[in-house]
Image 1 (tube, rainbow, N blue to C red):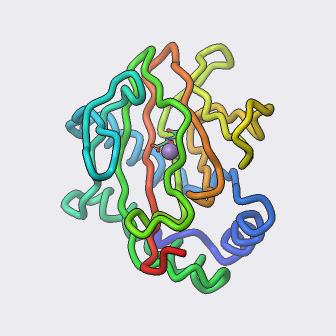
Image 2 (cartoon, rainbow, N blue to C red):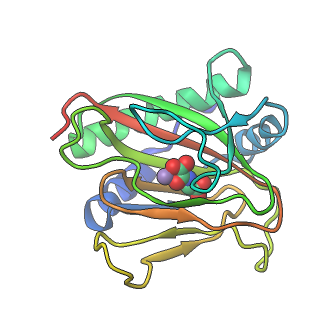
Length: 204
Ligand code: OGA
Ligand code: MN
Protein backbone atom coordinates (compact mmCIF):
# COMPACT_ATOMS: atom_id res chain seq x y z
CA UNK A 1 0.00 0.00 0.00
CA UNK A 2 1.58 3.24 -1.14
CA UNK A 3 0.49 6.33 0.70
CA UNK A 4 3.18 8.95 0.37
CA UNK A 5 6.77 9.94 1.02
CA UNK A 6 8.15 8.65 4.34
CA UNK A 7 8.99 10.86 7.31
CA UNK A 8 12.72 10.81 6.61
CA UNK A 9 12.21 12.04 3.04
CA UNK A 10 9.84 14.74 4.23
CA UNK A 11 12.39 15.96 6.80
CA UNK A 12 15.09 16.16 4.15
CA UNK A 13 12.85 17.91 1.61
CA UNK A 14 11.58 20.48 4.10
CA UNK A 15 15.18 21.27 5.03
CA UNK A 16 16.16 21.49 1.35
CA UNK A 17 13.27 23.80 0.46
CA UNK A 18 14.14 26.08 3.38
CA UNK A 19 17.83 26.22 2.58
CA UNK A 20 17.87 26.24 -1.24
CA UNK A 21 14.23 26.63 -2.39
CA UNK A 22 14.93 23.43 -4.39
CA UNK A 23 15.03 19.68 -3.80
CA UNK A 24 15.99 16.90 -6.23
CA UNK A 25 15.14 13.31 -5.30
CA UNK A 26 14.09 9.93 -6.66
CA UNK A 27 11.44 8.89 -4.18
CA UNK A 28 8.78 6.77 -5.84
CA UNK A 29 8.43 3.04 -5.22
CA UNK A 30 9.10 1.31 -8.55
CA UNK A 31 5.58 -0.13 -8.72
CA UNK A 32 3.95 3.31 -8.59
CA UNK A 33 6.53 4.81 -10.93
CA UNK A 34 6.00 2.07 -13.52
CA UNK A 35 2.21 2.50 -13.35
CA UNK A 36 2.52 6.28 -13.83
CA UNK A 37 4.96 5.80 -16.73
CA UNK A 38 2.44 3.55 -18.44
CA UNK A 39 -0.41 5.93 -17.71
CA UNK A 40 1.53 8.82 -19.26
CA UNK A 41 1.44 6.95 -22.57
CA UNK A 42 -2.36 6.48 -22.42
CA UNK A 43 -3.88 9.81 -21.38
CA UNK A 44 -5.26 12.24 -24.00
CA UNK A 45 -3.12 15.32 -24.24
CA UNK A 46 -4.30 18.80 -25.28
CA UNK A 47 -2.10 21.77 -26.18
CA UNK A 48 -1.06 23.73 -23.09
CA UNK A 49 -2.02 27.38 -22.60
CA UNK A 50 -0.09 30.25 -21.07
CA UNK A 51 -1.29 33.26 -19.08
CA UNK A 52 -3.75 33.57 -16.24
CA UNK A 53 -6.38 36.16 -17.11
CA UNK A 54 -6.13 35.55 -20.85
CA UNK A 55 -5.37 31.94 -21.47
CA UNK A 56 -3.95 31.54 -24.93
CA UNK A 57 -1.98 29.14 -27.06
CA UNK A 58 1.57 30.41 -27.47
CA UNK A 59 3.71 27.68 -28.98
CA UNK A 60 6.74 29.99 -29.09
CA UNK A 61 6.59 30.15 -25.28
CA UNK A 62 5.32 26.70 -24.48
CA UNK A 63 4.83 23.79 -26.89
CA UNK A 64 4.02 20.89 -24.60
CA UNK A 65 0.64 19.18 -24.31
CA UNK A 66 -1.03 18.35 -21.03
CA UNK A 67 -3.68 16.15 -19.41
CA UNK A 68 -5.07 17.06 -15.98
CA UNK A 69 -5.09 14.34 -13.34
CA UNK A 70 -8.41 13.40 -11.76
CA UNK A 71 -9.18 10.63 -9.29
CA UNK A 72 -11.12 8.64 -11.91
CA UNK A 73 -8.36 6.21 -12.74
CA UNK A 74 -6.68 3.90 -10.20
CA UNK A 75 -3.10 5.05 -10.54
CA UNK A 76 -4.09 8.70 -10.86
CA UNK A 77 -5.98 8.42 -7.57
CA UNK A 78 -2.85 6.90 -6.02
CA UNK A 79 -0.78 9.81 -7.28
CA UNK A 80 -3.23 12.34 -5.83
CA UNK A 81 -3.07 10.51 -2.51
CA UNK A 82 0.72 10.66 -2.63
CA UNK A 83 0.45 14.42 -3.22
CA UNK A 84 -1.99 14.76 -0.30
CA UNK A 85 0.58 13.10 1.96
CA UNK A 86 3.34 15.36 0.65
CA UNK A 87 1.18 18.45 1.22
CA UNK A 88 0.46 17.40 4.80
CA UNK A 89 4.11 16.54 5.46
CA UNK A 90 5.31 19.92 4.16
CA UNK A 91 2.64 21.81 6.10
CA UNK A 92 3.67 20.09 9.32
CA UNK A 93 7.29 21.02 8.83
CA UNK A 94 7.22 24.39 7.10
CA UNK A 95 3.85 25.95 8.02
CA UNK A 96 3.28 26.89 4.41
CA UNK A 97 -0.51 26.76 4.79
CA UNK A 98 -0.93 24.64 1.66
CA UNK A 99 -4.62 24.01 1.13
CA UNK A 100 -4.88 22.13 -2.17
CA UNK A 101 -2.99 20.94 -5.19
CA UNK A 102 -3.46 20.25 -8.87
CA UNK A 103 -1.48 18.04 -11.21
CA UNK A 104 -1.15 17.34 -14.91
CA UNK A 105 0.76 15.02 -17.17
CA UNK A 106 2.89 16.83 -19.71
CA UNK A 107 4.19 15.55 -23.02
CA UNK A 108 6.90 17.39 -24.94
CA UNK A 109 7.39 15.98 -28.46
CA UNK A 110 10.89 16.35 -29.91
CA UNK A 111 11.73 20.05 -30.27
CA UNK A 112 9.08 21.24 -27.79
CA UNK A 113 10.15 23.66 -25.08
CA UNK A 114 8.92 25.94 -22.32
CA UNK A 115 10.65 29.30 -22.22
CA UNK A 116 12.03 30.77 -19.04
CA UNK A 117 9.18 31.57 -16.64
CA UNK A 118 8.12 31.54 -13.01
CA UNK A 119 5.23 29.43 -11.78
CA UNK A 120 4.10 32.23 -9.43
CA UNK A 121 4.96 35.75 -8.44
CA UNK A 122 5.46 37.05 -4.93
CA UNK A 123 2.59 39.28 -3.80
CA UNK A 124 0.34 37.84 -6.45
CA UNK A 125 -3.13 37.79 -4.96
CA UNK A 126 -4.55 35.60 -7.70
CA UNK A 127 -2.10 32.88 -8.48
CA UNK A 128 -1.05 31.51 -5.14
CA UNK A 129 1.08 28.61 -6.21
CA UNK A 130 3.54 28.07 -3.39
CA UNK A 131 5.35 24.80 -4.14
CA UNK A 132 5.98 23.37 -7.63
CA UNK A 133 6.72 19.72 -8.36
CA UNK A 134 7.88 17.87 -11.47
CA UNK A 135 8.24 14.08 -11.69
CA UNK A 136 9.85 12.67 -14.83
CA UNK A 137 8.22 9.63 -16.37
CA UNK A 138 10.62 8.85 -19.21
CA UNK A 139 11.59 5.20 -19.36
CA UNK A 140 15.12 6.08 -20.40
CA UNK A 141 17.03 9.28 -21.00
CA UNK A 142 20.39 9.58 -22.73
CA UNK A 143 23.05 12.22 -22.01
CA UNK A 144 22.66 13.69 -25.47
CA UNK A 145 18.83 13.86 -25.52
CA UNK A 146 18.55 17.45 -24.21
CA UNK A 147 15.26 18.35 -22.53
CA UNK A 148 16.88 19.58 -19.33
CA UNK A 149 15.05 21.64 -16.76
CA UNK A 150 17.28 24.69 -16.32
CA UNK A 151 16.77 26.45 -13.00
CA UNK A 152 17.95 30.02 -12.47
CA UNK A 153 18.60 31.93 -9.28
CA UNK A 154 16.41 34.83 -8.36
CA UNK A 155 18.45 37.42 -10.26
CA UNK A 156 17.01 38.77 -13.49
CA UNK A 157 20.27 38.88 -15.35
CA UNK A 158 21.99 36.28 -17.45
CA UNK A 159 23.83 34.69 -14.56
CA UNK A 160 24.76 31.02 -14.88
CA UNK A 161 21.88 28.68 -14.08
CA UNK A 162 21.77 27.17 -10.61
CA UNK A 163 21.08 23.70 -12.01
CA UNK A 164 20.56 21.78 -15.22
CA UNK A 165 18.49 18.73 -14.50
CA UNK A 166 18.01 15.99 -17.08
CA UNK A 167 14.51 14.45 -16.97
CA UNK A 168 15.81 11.12 -15.66
CA UNK A 169 13.36 8.26 -15.02
CA UNK A 170 11.71 8.76 -11.62
CA UNK A 171 13.52 12.01 -10.83
CA UNK A 172 11.47 14.43 -8.72
CA UNK A 173 12.12 18.17 -8.48
CA UNK A 174 10.40 20.31 -5.86
CA UNK A 175 10.86 24.07 -5.61
CA UNK A 176 9.30 27.22 -4.21
CA UNK A 177 7.13 28.51 -7.05
CA UNK A 178 7.82 32.22 -6.70
CA UNK A 179 11.56 31.90 -6.05
CA UNK A 180 13.07 30.16 -9.05
CA UNK A 181 12.68 31.08 -12.73
CA UNK A 182 13.21 28.02 -14.93
CA UNK A 183 12.90 26.73 -18.48
CA UNK A 184 12.59 23.45 -20.36
CA UNK A 185 15.07 22.95 -23.20
CA UNK A 186 13.99 21.21 -26.40
CA UNK A 187 14.62 17.47 -26.43
CA UNK A 188 15.54 14.96 -29.09
CA UNK A 189 13.07 12.38 -27.81
CA UNK A 190 9.55 12.30 -26.36
CA UNK A 191 9.61 13.77 -22.85
CA UNK A 192 6.97 12.73 -20.30
CA UNK A 193 6.37 14.15 -16.83
CA UNK A 194 3.85 14.92 -14.14
CA UNK A 195 3.75 18.46 -12.78
CA UNK A 196 1.93 19.55 -9.63
CA UNK A 197 1.41 22.78 -7.73
CA UNK A 198 0.49 23.17 -4.11
CA UNK A 199 -1.54 26.27 -3.41
CA UNK A 200 -2.22 28.21 -0.25
CA UNK A 201 -4.92 30.70 0.58
CA UNK A 202 -2.46 33.23 1.97
CA UNK A 203 -0.81 35.00 -0.94
CA UNK A 204 1.78 37.35 0.55
C1 OGA B 1 5.99 23.76 -15.89
C2 OGA B 1 7.45 23.45 -15.91
C3 OGA B 1 9.25 21.84 -15.95
C4 OGA B 1 9.63 20.54 -16.54
O1 OGA B 1 5.20 22.91 -16.33
O2 OGA B 1 5.63 24.86 -15.41
O3 OGA B 1 8.20 24.35 -15.68
O4 OGA B 1 10.82 20.14 -16.37
N1 OGA B 1 7.89 22.18 -16.14
O5 OGA B 1 8.82 19.89 -17.18
MN1 MN C 1 7.21 25.97 -14.58
